[in-house]
Amino acid sequence: MKPIKKLITHILMALTVSLTSLSSQAAEPLLIGYSDWPGWVAWEVAIEKDWFKEEGVDVKFEWFDYVASMDAFAAGKLDAVGMTNGDALVLGASGAKNVMFMVTDYSDGNDMVVARAGINSVEELKGKKIGIEIGFVSHLLLLDALEKVGMSESDVELVNVPTNETPQVLASGDVDAIVAWQPSSGQALTALPGSTAIATSKDAPGLIYDMFVASPSSYSNRKADWEKVVKVWYRVVDFVNNPKTQPEALSIMSARVGLTPEAYEPFLKGTKILTLEESKAAFKKGDGLSSIYGSSQIADDFNVKYDVYKESQSPDAYIDPSIVMGL
Image (cartoon, rainbow, N blue to C red; front, side):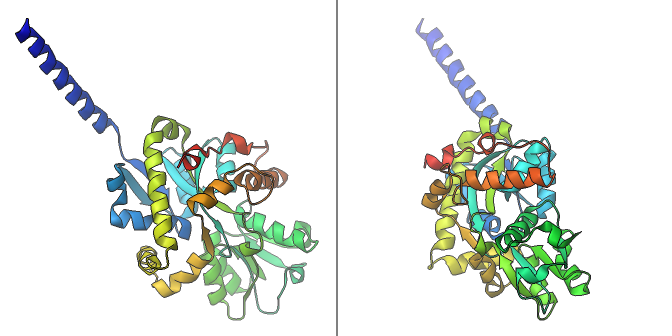
């Protein structure tokens, strides 16, 4: 009987090796979309330093323009993508359901209302033309700025302009102001001499959270891999935020978008990249902007009010903080 037992043992071992190999082959790289925003460009640090391999997770990052990245995700071409919490709701309402499982940052000055020379306050926008990508996060920022001074959308004239075209439109004189995020907002300031930022996201911290969202299927089927991705992210955060390593981080990040570290530094300063503890605090349920839940509810109210979509989207159905809270 001993030879038979030995043969069975060898067969079982061979099957185990074979199944392990097949499992490895079946685990395709996680396809992740990212675009030109400091809280997402920071992934370049981990990519360059090969930290994903060290963590034991196979990933492939694909570079897009922001809107194109959302389109690719909606089409099922990506496992995950970086987008704002408000835009995650918009995508979900259109049928591309997603899970907001990680927060990278919130805009802390990079999103701006930029006005031509002679307009020095939000109040002075009354009756003026504003170039803006209607229905996107810039629209929400503008409404917040108007409401703070007792004005509403009816007090201004909106001109629908793709965000990446706002600098040229402002410089052309066709509008009196634009609303955009970096790098477009910074380009608008330099494209038109005398222009100035009369309101920014620094005035409303937490109004615009930047998230990483995954498809529900990828998230549920490969949660262990996503846990590793999140661990890598907080290694990146420490590297970017540490004064000793930040110069190297700036060098890596700026190279990705074709700028010098000196030119890129203001973009990083306008982005509040959250530490693990700050992320945990943001993931706690609350009604205000300090909570992703509260911020997302405000975004949902805006989206319904302005017919971005018809039916309200519950933030609870989108947000899963379990990975971050478990670290």
